[in-house]
Length: 187
Image 1 (cartoon, helix red, strand yellow):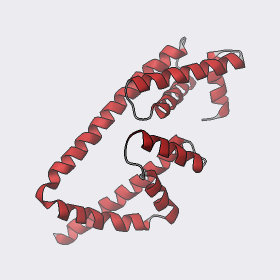
Image 2: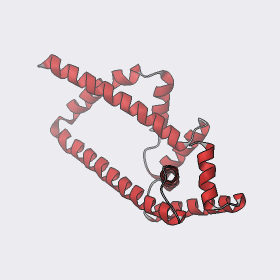
Image 3: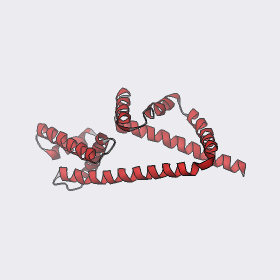
Image 4: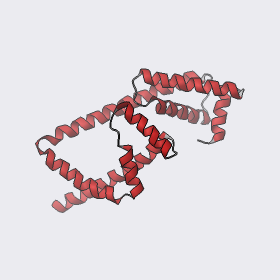
């Protein structure tokens, strides 16, 4: 986000820079509290996402008389999106497990044989990033670990996620291509 855009957002909160800073901090705390109450894994990142979306909408010309209420409305939408995403991921995982059935060893071998060459095609630093990002597997420790990883790499958490997402997409594309080529060879 450009500094001028953020400065305009702060000015919308208050003409006085100190008051704008306090109101911004207060707004961020409210959003984090909202997401914590909802039981979200990473309330800080979601609060940042809400503020980013609000700034984009305001910059796009949205008339916003009450920034706090506007952001809370966006927070509700972001929460619903997060819940839907979590449900889709859970459903996909459960379906994957159910489909493994008796041939689970064969499936795991097949996945490994498709994924390993794709992973090895990544640059060494990309491999290390994926391994580091996936190091912690659950809960609060995973969130804290990823925040520390982002700090260590001198990135924001959102930038770190974006990089990992691009790498995952790269792997997915490679695996899909390999799967199609092995299917066409076996037919």
